[in-house]
Length: 415
Image (cartoon, rainbow, N blue to C red; front, side, top):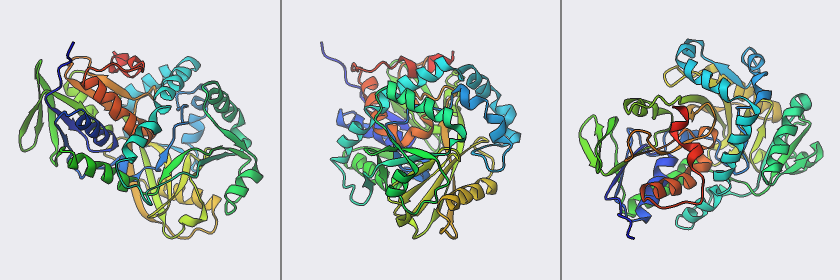
């Protein structure tokens, strides 16, 4: 039996998800156009920590974290902040989060994050064989450090990763200092993922993938998408501020901005945003050899071509609130706690992590329209999951079978 090939696809969003989906569709000889009001990769894909994190199966829907939230919110030196003017708009997300913050949901999320994370690097390797990644990627591992203050949470994480078969190596303070001698030993222990990679320039990598997409015949339209709809069984319509475009199928992959479009399609998906920040310490990137993440502080440092990037914190405050100088100062203080030799920082940046309250992404067909496919909500792991999401979505659009159980990522779980 011959499977009918899709005649054309439009993708809303030129971040790592959209660009990887587009490239995979072209490999199946499906004409593809990507839409974005910004240049490719200029949102969350630009300013992230640059970690490829196939081990990061545990998320924030955990009972042990729930009890710490009030304390974190009211601490001036805490990893979580809230824009109080945004609370009314965030109530649906908070309601679903509380429903999902239990042991059963935690293990469900870990299992199905592991399912796609386990294939994430193989999917990237296929792409990296086709582009020049010189001075853009390093494989020196990634270190997580912590104090004994929340040791029960660390022990829980270690056990769940062990149960799922995730490779990890526990480190003493001496082990950590042997790897990173410039760190001030304000920590009690850590964990090493020696097989992990990091990006020296995330945006540089995305640009290379995008160039390959264009070289293969992909098209890019730099326009703001106003609406998306399915006209009939063989047509979808993407309406920009300048023109209407018709495709057989369309993909919503615009991260934290996806909710505007899914609301138009009659799906009240509780997508919201974790606002994350970064700063750079120029010329300081050689102080550490690999990314270091301080779990107690909710921040990390990555040596990049632009300098030493300090990145992290979670701020709940939507898409329209201004940048928070307190969050920027928090990042600088955290970095200097670990590396007291740091001086002034540059490049204050705010980005939006698209997050669902069960911390699983939405990947799959729209509940109401079979020719519209979703690919958003990857929270802190959008960068890691770009390539595997591309493969999954291209298979969905091509009506190909996959060996993955995709039902946990369906938007219908919020019905």
